[in-house]
Amino acid sequence: MVVAISKEKVFTSPYEHSIPGTEGWERMYPHILLFHKDRKGRWEKLSWMRQMQHWPKLLTPFDACATLLPAQLGLTPYQRRVFVLPVGGGLFEPILNGYVYQTETPPITDQKEVEERAKEFIKKLTFINQNFDEIYPKWKKSVRKILDEQWSLYDEIQDLPYIEELSFFAEVRGITSGHKLIEIYDKVIELYNKIQIGYQYQWIGVAYAAYLSLLEFCKQAFPKFDERDLISMITGAELEAFRPDQELRQLAKLAVDLGLSQFFEKATKFEGLQEELRKTDRGREWLKEFDKVSYPWFYMMVSEGVFATCNDECWIENPSIILGFLKNYIEMIKKGENIERDVKSLIRHKEELFKKLYDSLKTEDEKKRFKELYEITSKLYISVEDQVLYVKNFNYALLRRNIRKFAEILAKHGIIKEPNDIFYLRFEEIKAALQELLWIWGNYEPPTDYFKKEIEWRKQMLETFKKWRPPAWLGPWKEVPEEPFFIIHGGLVADRVDIYRKVEHIEELTEIKGWPASPGVVEGVSRVIHESKDIRELRPGEILVCPHTSPAWTPAFAIIKAVVTEQGGVMSHAGIVSREYGIPAVVGTYCATQVIKTGDLVRVDGNNGVVTILKRAE
View (tube, helix red, strand yellow):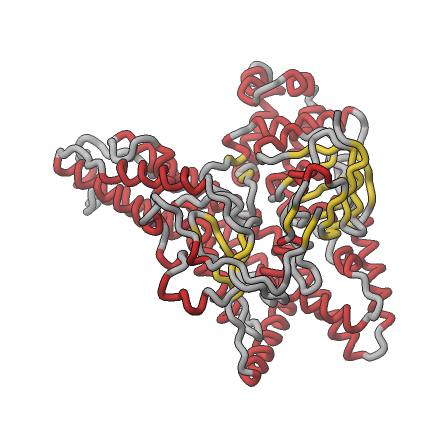
């Protein structure tokens, strides 16, 4: 039975959820990411939802600094001070017992100020629309330059020498190797934050605002407007986010052309495949091409949430994921199946829809406004997925790559117990650990147990938090959200509150509802994937059921019949990519992985957002 939460209900206060034995846990995280007691009077009046799409799991101190803190330092300033959304925009996203909650920032209510901000917002939206083709390539070039610099720092991260060499004087270095190591660490964090706090939000906020502005216009201008038409109108783009998948397809074609497919079919591990391929000229030719495209295209983080975590892997770290995708593509090629997207059909369909709506408008002003909103939304649509590729994949993967090298040095010198322990420290604490390394190196002193003891305590805190069941909702109910991020990612509008429903007797459900993110109706056998590393188990023709998808999942869309997710709205990754591949998608179901089991025969209705279990797996 599905029960909608009462809109009159007031849920428990975020300040009423202390867990015995975890006193002092707040010191693990930056203080601005907490339900601070100084904010209690104001924040108890706000509606809070558990942030499941971006951070579905417990957050380590490292990831609080790597993803949550940049989101708080970047999103709201961009929404309020850069894009100047009329009513304000932005989110509060504090941590409660290790889990992230989210609410809209209070809106600006002064009507005169709202009107002035609206003028500024339109001015900036118009400028972006008129100059996007010129300035967006500059954005990508700048981001890629920062990523390349981050990539190059890896070789500079070196353990401290026993003594400085004579070249120290000849090169007039001025600082010791220990000091240099700290400088490199500062540079790693600086480069990462430049993308994560700044470049990440240059387009995404205004893209969501533009989409919602276009949607509002269409609902007012066309009495019988179907929102699914708008979804279809912003497809058919050559997204760079598809580049990793394209590289995989090219490698699969090359393997077939070189007569190497039998090696891939027999391989169970990528390392074993490499050993076999190195034995032949054709195999070495394929491996050379693989190495050529690996950076950056295979630094794809495979995560359960929108943001990756320190415990997730990227393709290149677990190449068995890559092998699984290659096997599927090689199998399809040998069967004579087309593995390319039909972009031309998507473009033709969206152009027909736009023309039909455009021609139905009666005034030139309406036509001009509609065309402007459509053009800017179509352009910014590209940036939504591209920023996920560069920011949430490459940027995080390279940070994690460099941080692990620092971790190996700290563990070798006994400052932390093992390399993975570094992820229980905040950014500034990692620098403090490197400062201790410099101190003990210079003074011939053994390390203290300070960081080891603190890390052990934090591990115990997080283990305790794992046993806690965080409520889905805190504070008073707010029916109508206004912040574009809240609506787009949460799938929330005034008449849709399904994401917060309570499910009882879940095993008895045979039908679940979500958002119709990509049209079409298909039936097929389901494959439920909880852990993102298991995407390599997908077989052609199956229906993917999962909590959420990210660009690292994109190759799966070429072989599946449909996708069903628990989180996300129409502009989530699953929604965007399913439309580009022309397969049905239902997103934001809240409970799909709990209701559906692998092997169930299901019908996915992407027209109406309904998933029906036709037959249970035996």
